[in-house]
Amino acid sequence: MRKSIDELVDVDIEGTVAREIFVDDELFEQELEHIFGRAWLFVGHIGLVPNPNDYFQSRMGTDPVILTRDKAGGIHVLLNTCTHRGMKLCRSDQGNTRTFTCPYHGWSFSTDGRLVSRPGGLYGVPGYEKNYHSELDKEKWGLIPVPRVETYKGTVWASWDIEAPSLLDYLGDMRLYLDYALDYRDGRPDGAEVIGGVQKWRVKANWKMIPENFIGDLYHDVSHRSVDSVGIGPSGKGRRDKFGNRVTLCFPQHGHGVIGQLPFYEEYEGVSGTWGDDAETREYHERIHHSRVERFGDRMRVSMSVGTIFPSMSFHGRQPRTIAWVHPLSATETEMWRIFLVDRDAPDSVKDQARRYYMRYSGPGGLTESDDMENWSYATRASTGWRSRQLQFNYQMGLGHARPVPELAHAVENGEYNEENARAFYRRWAQFMNADSWKEIPMPVGIGNRASTHREVRQ
Ligand code: FES
Ligand code: FE
Image 1 (cartoon, rainbow, N blue to C red):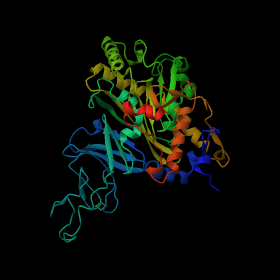
Image 2: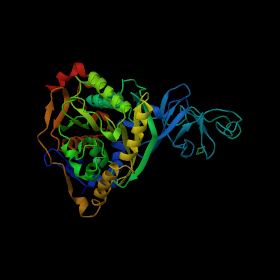
Image 3: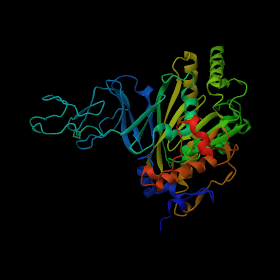
Image 4: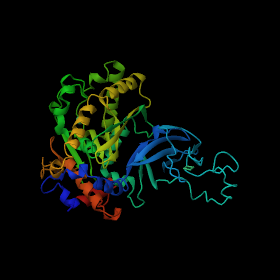
């Protein structure tokens, strides 16, 4: 008999998660509805659709969607399937168009999703007068819009569930760390630009292993030993376990978490030579450091390096500033996408250093990401067998040792090596999987307004 979700995820007593949730097809189907059908999902960055009628093809779970900017500038997320007979309407990764014309029978849709009307023309609905006798209700047969879409400092998020809380409530205090990544230079929403396109690749791994890794797995230092030993990792300082002061911090009630360093910032240490050694680059990074201390210093607990927003979006807060998000394809295969952000008004030398660094470090050809991909894919493959899938993964490290964070009511932190953030992620996963609607998913009281609500929640 199938185990219950609470038996599969026992992070609080036993500190275990059943391997079944990483390989089982039925549970995967349930995830599509309960998690990808309800949670706020990152779908792209406005830098990917800067002009009227720009579009970018994205995904929500296994559904293809199109992120568009309509001709008046409005942002939409539309299901990428023709309402006539299901043809995948847009098949280019991104571009600019006044209408999406279906290659099957020619129905045409504007960038805000309306089925357009051009009587007698080739586009619109071919044969509208003659064959449909002008009776087709075009209002009703537009593209299916994702009902909840919100943008936050250039990031675009969508949810299929009209009952979902606001994006800000969903983010909770994790918003501070998203700000840390998005407000890198001066907090302007248009301050960052996407450079180098979107990297996309497939991993034969369960999707959860990826955000789980980014939410707090410092323990896998050994995986990157080869990159670190030659000083070409992100710090350029050699072994990661010698970096010092690293800590993980999470928001257990939301399922989000970060890896960072304590205290928030000490003296400016300079950036690694891997970012470039010229005076212009050094001066630029130092200036940014001081501006960030000024803007975030009294609000931040740790200087963040990487983190995850449940369920599927991860990002780096410092250089490298990247957003990586995952699209599940099946229980055992996932597509990963990554974009790279750089300050729009950064000197060209800084942009060029960033571009080179991103290529060297991230993505399927990147020195570090390829280490991680091996771990995720072999761990998935070695858990699919009849015997191995009956076992559990061990998440016991630091169980019972999390400490509350005085500055952040909803946060806990643990030492450098622990699995608190992963436990929070799977606890949240179980809450979504058990719930039949958003009403049954616990949300902290009084979120979205830090100043007035923290004390109330802590008591
Ligand atoms: Fe698109 Fe027929 S499937 S017009
Ligand atoms: Fe890694």
